[in-house]
Length: 506
Image (cartoon, rainbow, N blue to C red; front, side):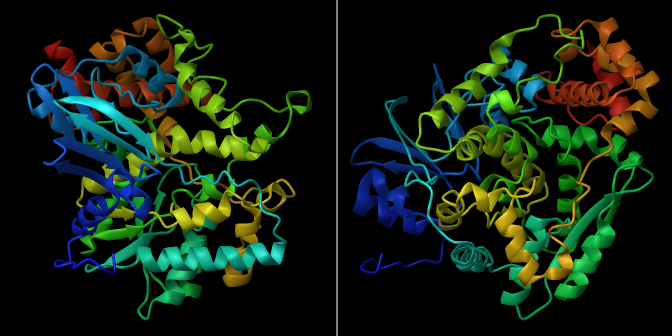
C-alpha cells in the first residue's frame, strides 16, 4: 500500500484499499487474524472474509427476511430473524467429537464462513465463494537440522514481534509446556519490560499441576507470573456462565481454565494475551499424529475413529453420520501431495483447530473483553512448519522435535525434552463427587432427553472409568448449553440451580 494514503490508524482501513486495488484477491495480501464484512456499492455485493486459520469466527444465515451475519450465532438469534433450532447432524458431531465440522453449525440455518473463505452475497443470497489456504503445497523441504533451526527462529521471532504490536497492555498464557515456553523465550528477548505471564492449576484435585515448572521458567525468563488456583466450587458456580459464552459449542473442558485465566487477565488491567494455540498442529505435537504416520498393519489408525459415546449404551440412536465431516476433511487432505503426517495435520487444521481450540479461545476471552493472539498461527510460520521433513517433526517418540531442539538452545531451563505430564482438567473427578445429585438432574434435561435414555444417563453418572467420566462431562455441558441457547433460560446461578430451574420449567 505504498501508493495509498492511509489516513487513519484503524485496522479496518487497509482492507478497503486492498479491495479497491485487488478485488476479491485482497485477502491474499492480509496477514493476521480477521473476520471482515465489506460492502461494495458499485458491484452491489457484500463480501465476508475470514482469516485462513479461522482464528476469528464469522457466521451468516440466508432467511426469508433477509441475509444476516455476525461474529457469533447469538447475535443472529437476537436479531429475531433466526429461530434457535437444533441441527441434528451437528449435534451428533458435538456429542461424539466434542466439536462440529465444516460450514454447518449446531444451529439449523446458521452457517460458518470457513477458515480462509471469502463469500460473495448479492440480493440476499450467496453467489460465489473462494478459499485461501496457508498450508504449503510445495512439498517437503530438503532442510538440514541446522537450516531448519535457523529458519524457524527467523519465522517465530518475526511472528511474535508482529503479534506484540499493541496500543494496550498485553501478557501471555504460560503452562510451562513447549509451546508457551517458546513464546515466553521470544517475548522476553523482544521486550524491555518483564513479560506478564498467567498460569492456572487445580487445587484439591488429582490431576498434574505444572505451575511449579511454569513458575521456574518464568523466573529464568525474567517474567512476572500471576498464578490462578481453580477449585471445584468455582467449577460448579461458573460453568453455566461458561456454557452461555460458548454459543458455537465445543465440549472441550479446557474452556474452564481458559475462562478463568481470561478473567484474571482482565482483573490485571490487560486487554491482549498471546497464547500457544496452533503449536501442536504446526509442529506435529499430538500423539495421534505418530499413530497416523504408521500404516494400519503396523498399528496405525485413522484419527477419531471412536466417538465419546460409542459402546456406552446411552444414546437413543447410534448414527454413523457424525464421522462424515472428519472423513471429508481426511479425503481432502489425502488428495493433496502430503505425507501421512502432513495429511493428519491438515485434517486438524480443517476442523479441530478452528471449531474446537480457536472457538474456545475466542469465546472465553471475549467474554471478558480480552483479545487473544496466536503467533504460531501465522502464514509465515505455517509456510515453514508445514514443509518441515517428518523426521524433524517427530523423532524418538516425541512430536514437535525441532521446536523442542530450538527451545533447548534458547531456554534450556524449560526442559523441552522432558516428558510433560500434560495439562488436564478434573471435570470427571468433580462430577463424580456429586454424581448422585447431578446425574438424575442431567438425565431429565430437555436437551438430553432428546438424545439419551434417562435411566442410561443416571447409570452412566454412577459408574467409574475414564471414558464414562468424560461422557458425563459432555452431557453436563450440553445440558447447560441447550438450556441457555435453545430454551432461552438465562442466568440461573450454579449448575444445580440451573438444572433444577430447567427441570421445573420443562
